[in-house]
Image: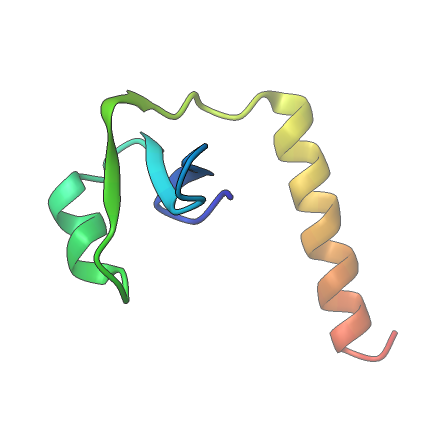
Length: 73
């Protein structure tokens, strides 16, 4: 699962979501403070890589289409 703070994956045994990657400028403390449950972190947490230009273009296009849809266009 990808959020605005991190990337989580289910634990293979418990199926509990575990943080495996933090986005740039996001700390474990901030993630813990702003999450609505007791969040679990993997033993080795990576930094989420910056999105590629292509990924950013796709996201911007999706945002524009969503805004047009909500505006009734």
